Image 1 (tube, rainbow, N blue to C red):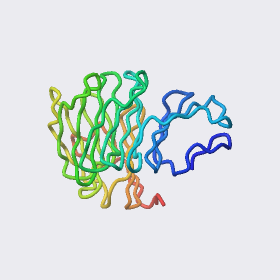
Image 2 (cartoon, helix red, strand yellow; image 1 turned 180 degrees about the vertical axis):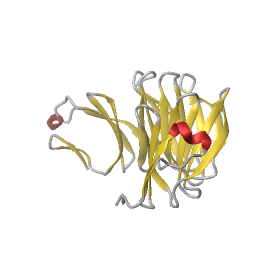
Image 3 (cartoon, one colour; image 1 turned 45 degrees about the vertical axis):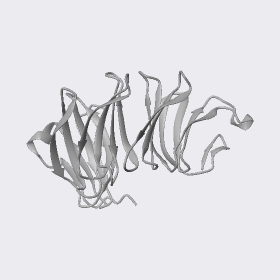
Image 4 (cartoon, helix red, strand yellow; image 1 turned 60 degrees about the vertical axis):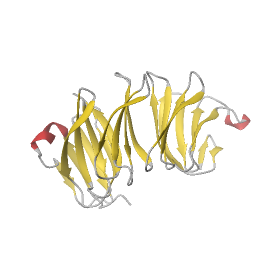
Length: 233
């Protein structure tokens, strides 16, 4: 359940959320709703929240593109939905072979990267100005998270079957080179990069959290810190 100032907004569990700006929050719920919440409104009068997307299953990931004014969501219904706030309508639905919880946006270059789940296993690269897929690459495992890095690099975390960290290079809009790092012995649930983009943090079902020095990835250097007994339960 999601409640703000004591007023219930969503009856279901919250699966994902992201700030659009300091006054507006985007929420993805277990029932599949993607909701835009204006934090300045009076919720007692049922104002301030609007459904901008609906998945047939959990809304696993929500992202906001400030350059295009899009709300983008990935769902357990094997789809990515793109909602245009200016036109106030759904403008694109992209079907996958599995749930999608790995999405990242690069607003400087108006582009998006996504990753599919267990039966999809594919990284897909899009131009947000045309909404066209420019390239794709099968990574042979469930993709749980993905992020843009400088110099046309992407970092992705894997679940079943490899449980690895993958570094993928973009060459002339083609996803090409892939370097794999065996990092955990069970699936990776979470991946985050530091604001300076020099480090990444991975967390796995194996109970380990690992801090990675991204500048050393090409040398296949091990994680700079391995916290072996930190449980996520």
